[in-house]
Amino acid sequence: MSGPQGSGMNIGEIARRAGVSRSTVSYALSGKRQVSDATRRRIQDVIDELGYRPNASARALAEGRTRTIGLVIPPASKRLTHMQLDFVGSVVEAAAQVDLDVLLSPSGGDHDRSFERLVSESRVDGVLLMEIRIEDARVDRLRDARMPFVGIGHPANDPQMCWVDIDYAGLIGHCVRHLADLGHRSIALLNRSPELVATGYGPSHRARAGFVRAVEEHGLKGVELLCGDDARSGQECIAELLANDPGITALATVNEAALPGVQRALDQAGRSVPRDFSITGIVASHWAEDFRPALTAADVPTADMATQAMSLLVERISDPTAPAQHLLMSPPITLRHSTAAAPVPHREP
Image (cartoon, rainbow, N blue to C red; front, top):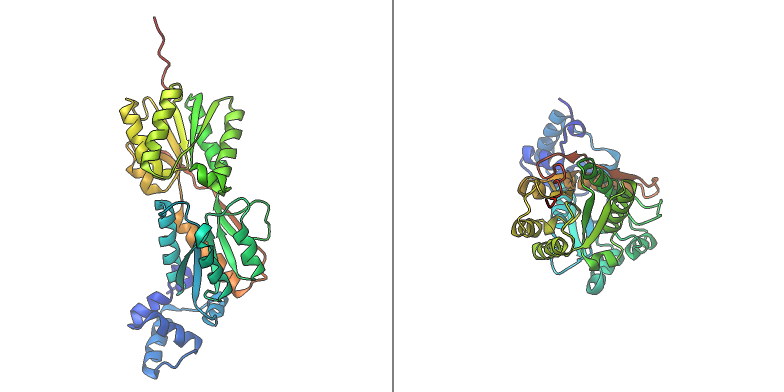
């Protein structure tokens, strides 16, 4: 039977099969605390059956101080978006797979004290940093503190930082090319909120750059909309777009939280998707599948990103001097039912 490194087995599974807690398995492996002979034999029997061999990184973590990692999110508003919540859940699950706890810490504005405590009081062995800006002071603070960290997202021009990100520029470019191939000549980009863009939020700026480049390459008319991360803002943005520029026939978006409002605005304007108006973008799969009709989109690989980021962080904790790794993900655009050939312009007789 293949071991956990080949089949996804982990300390949690060993604990379940042996009928003990995760911490008991960890103590048995590390020798940090006394475990009864009977319990140790039961754990060893499961380990032998599974062929479990903890790798070097796992052994290093077993000797760590806290067995806790910090997940740092700067709140862009009073509540987390669904995409942020998806990442939080995925990070917690990925941490559980390597027997780590997660301490959630906000940062930015009034929350900087929380971030500073996380960094300065040795509460965690390492940090996952989310919602990264083009220029991000938190990156410098973590580096100055010699805290192992990995970004979900990345700043500009920082080859020494370890990160996992989505190729927003390239994917939005693919979305625009897909719409252009369908004959659309006037396309809008539904970006994130004005406040978030003003802070230098990386995905928004990269999506904008990819959109502008693709529009110019194909000789299209392009309009950018800055939109709050909620349905009401989406409805207002699209209603205003259609009123001011009725010639727009397609939309690419990186603002999944606005999609229900986009749907309502199009319905109220009598624009049928995809007959009269095509939509695509970069969104989580459940948002794409909840749209009517299902959205043609590059699905955000939330779970995979969290797993990869956690793996990189484990490596950084065990060996802070290891070369920085950069994982730029470019998921394929899943063709569903929200894009079609551009409508033929109505001509007066």
